[in-house]
Amino acid sequence: MNGKVRNVGIVIVSHSPLVARGTADMVRQMVGESVPLAWAGGNAEGGLGTHAPGILAAIESAWSEAGVAVFVDLGGAETNSEMAIEMLGSDKAGRVAICNAPLVEGAVIAAAEASGGAPLSRVVATAEELSP
Amino acid sequence: MKVRTVDQEERVLADRGLIAGLIETCSAAIAAHADHLCLLDSAIGDGDHGTNMKRGFDALRSESDALSALPLAQAIERIGVTLVMNVGGAAGPLYGTLLIEIGRSLGTSGADTDLPDAFGKAVDAVARRGRALPGDKTLLDVLYPVHAELVRHAAPDAIAGRAESAARHTIGMRAMRGRAAYLGDRSIGHIDPGASSCALLTSAICRYIEEYRPA
Image (cartoon, rainbow over all chains, first blue to last red; front, side):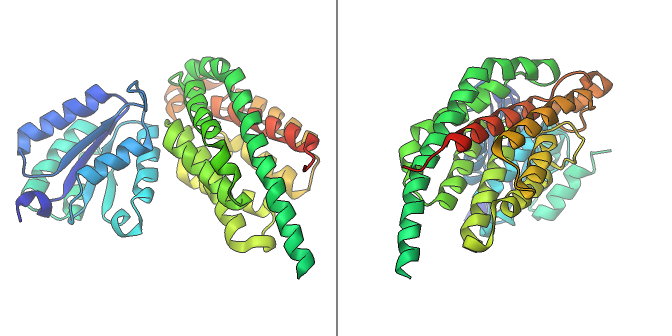
């Protein structure tokens, strides 16, 4: 079993596919392959927006038994992430947290924490320390 | 017992036509007003409300046959899920939550739950989902007044009229949720796009129900 399964996963959700992918690139540069990572950006047609099925797929792709920390940009990203988490089913839903933190800084600092094997609560708390 | 079974069969058959008709009438209303809803959203939001709603109702239209074959409560819940999966934006989760919750309430408690009760619980769930209160300039400012009309068993045209005046009432409100909230006082003077689509759908549904005669 490698570290990818043990460490908390990171999901990045933005209205913009470019922002989501770019943030994921920065996380990857920081922590390599040591944390499961996925992004969801844009609406169903790939334009600006958010949609729950894309977020659900991202959470499943970054799934870890240790849980997943989700980073969102604006309103709809958060509400659609909540819907996606509910659609995961109650067993997994309890192990996914939406972080109240800035998207880029939050995701990078959370990934650094996750790569050291920190539990979900610690990963979330570290990222949320960034919020005023 | 036998009478009840026949009643239930008739109701299921009636519901089948009802669901297909409601999907058609709501889809047509959204399609006809999609550009207008985008325009309203451009003024205080990101300008995609009409496009998002149309995407959701196009999906409902393509699933209409399958949805119509379900019992009423289940059909309403599935309509909510389809909206969540296809509308996107904040509207998807909000309208989706409304219908999913109505469907679940009607489905679990059967004949004991009446529509006003199920609707009221669902509106509270929408408020929790959006972390919004009445007066925040959201679709809740239409949903709560509609609920009040349902509770007093108002006629469909009275419900529609109340929904439309409630939507207009959001013009004077300052947005507290969603992207319009970033505009602060500058959000005052514009109708809320979510409240507007909510009144549009309420009116379409009320008009349909008023004219609906089970086959």
